[in-house]
Image 1 (spheres, helix red, strand yellow):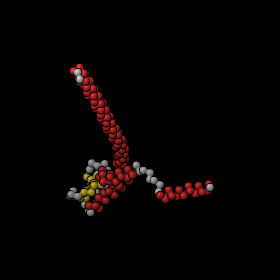
Image 2: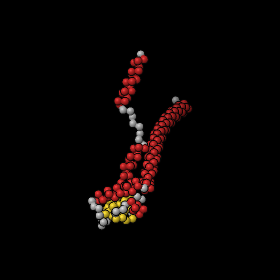
Image 3: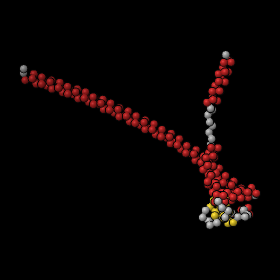
Image 4: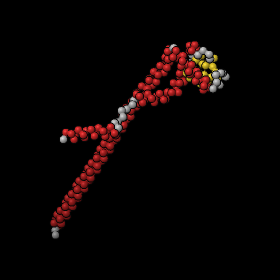
Length: 210
């Protein structure tokens, strides 16, 4: 083989090798690009799933928050209504002083009950100065109260508080429960027996039609 032929052969093999290298590089680049695309798609999908989950969670939290806020508003409205009713009851008790003979009889009953609780008639009766005329026969002292009486032993060591404020305070929780029950009583479902009877009547009508 001549030198010229040898050079041609080497040159041809060099071109072939270069082509193979370039082809391999293109394949590797394509594979890398595909791998990169797949990885990018995976990350995008993961991000979308995460965002969707977060949105769902926020939406759920929003619904829960709204429900809690609505429940709070209803509770506050009910509490305000009951508080208003309690205040009205307190005002009615205070206005009882204007009833004359009925109020006088009530004061004497409260004073008697206070004496019974203390177990003695040697007492002082504290009442509003305007009510003293209804409590003749007792040792009377003025008390800055809206109505009722406070009965205490002559030495002042033991007392029975029958003032309207004390009575209201003692019965406030029970009145609150009763007001809630009356004002916000929910309709009860029909009893099982009633449902059965209604069902029997409907079935009877169907049979008659046949």
